[in-house]
Image 1 (cartoon, helix red, strand yellow):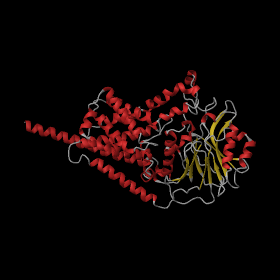
Image 2 (image 1 turned 30 degrees about the vertical axis):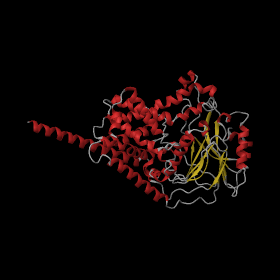
Image 3 (image 1 turned 135 degrees about the vertical axis):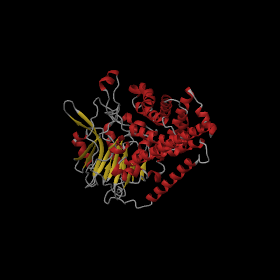
Image 4 (image 1 turned 180 degrees about the vertical axis):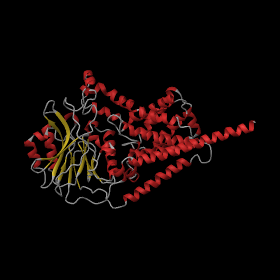
Length: 527
């Protein structure tokens, strides 16, 4: 262990940068869909050792940047797939997407590395400081500019549903902080003394205890199902390069109609189609509305994604979700409020448009943003909070304040990313939103992964990526009362970070006191 640490500490130049990038990439392999969670230990243990050898804040920043660059390059490689849906227009930008996004995000780990560098304590103090700084950097990444909290380290635990129950109290950011402490604590093994393995052992036992608590929580009453509701989620698996072709749009709707009409043991009361399942301005197509209404059972509804147009000067377009009753009337609408930069609108349009850069979605008009999270009333259903596409990755934006729903509905089109890691990561994040809020999640994705998830994150039923079909199932009930996270948001994670910061400060104080004692003792001996 000491030899390995010394080898890392002795690295300089490109060897240090390359090692940091490799460690960061190793940490990415712990995330969905790979789930090689043990790789977090060498990744963050090695990161602590590398930072311990940095003599300046600039050196720490560079090391942290390379760690982040390696991490985000592997974690977000799939973003390039979106450009390949129209390679003639966008293939030239592939290197900028695959390498540019990691380069833009890498400063967040660099900031965390600088913070750790200035902690003048023992290794455990640096481990605790890294947990605080890394989690704070993740929070900043999720909020600065439009925010991008995708692939937070806590998502590594998505296969371990019992441990995920922690997010009902401390959220995904709090779970990230605990994960960093557990992964990096082995770095203390290089310290002197017989207790150098104590932090790693305590971290292992702590995770085991927290997992056991989650097992107990899952053993409780699941809350049952909403009476009189039978859902049918339709996953048509429409390829993205066919999505907006004029000659295929009607055939796409017919495909959804055919799948929705398939026989079932229990007739569905509600049909759920994914984001932009109807590639028309649906509210302006009365004949199509009437035809879709005939699919709906009495007292039920069809919920479908569709663009919405408001003519004017200038015209406006929204990425919307409509609820249709059996008469084909639009009885509820939600407009997506958190838009994807470059995907749904072009930031700095006056500059980028001159360079020939356009948004990836069809049309020349930028989408307009809706008014924010809202609770939607739908005939025959409890109140619902709709989430379109990647709105599900923002922990604090899934429920409108003062309007708590009874369930979450995530409609999305992940065909942009084909059969890559992206759709798995997207689904993992949506699952955690259900646990945090104590609300069931229903997810309809064009190419997958569609699913029904109970308020504890357990998957009741799902359709795999790339599969066309339907998923029939019940609507689970929410937890009996709102979770601590639903009540207080990220306050639980903040308390945890404060505790870690106080513990790190105490280790620094103790180290400083020990150094002072040593110096004074030598002075006494000298004189």
